[in-house]
Image 1 (cartoon, rainbow, N blue to C red):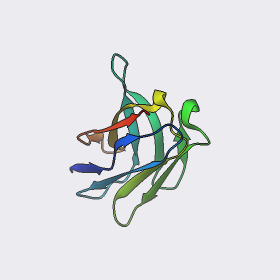
Image 2: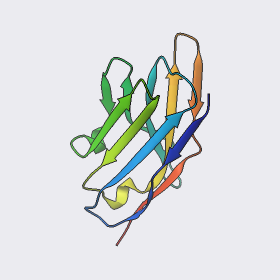
Image 3: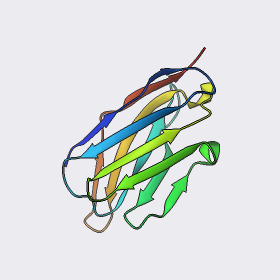
Image 4: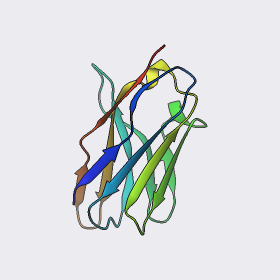
Length: 114
């Protein structure tokens, strides 16, 4: 399975951006987004199970929304009220714990700056 992410780019503080990720095959587990800022470890941003359960980093709660289409094998991240601290490379992730499989997308840069 391959993950293809799209979206990202430069946005002003307070602005919005949407990231999308499409999997080349079916994912029977968790899909979501992680990010890595320069000099920092990769961290979870938001994930969603196939049943619709979500998990968010505290820093993005109320601003970011993860959504998923199981039929299309896609996961999206709507980011609102963006802050400079949200600047990072965002990675799409798919995790199938039952089969012990995990996949990563290529990463897409999000830069929040005026």
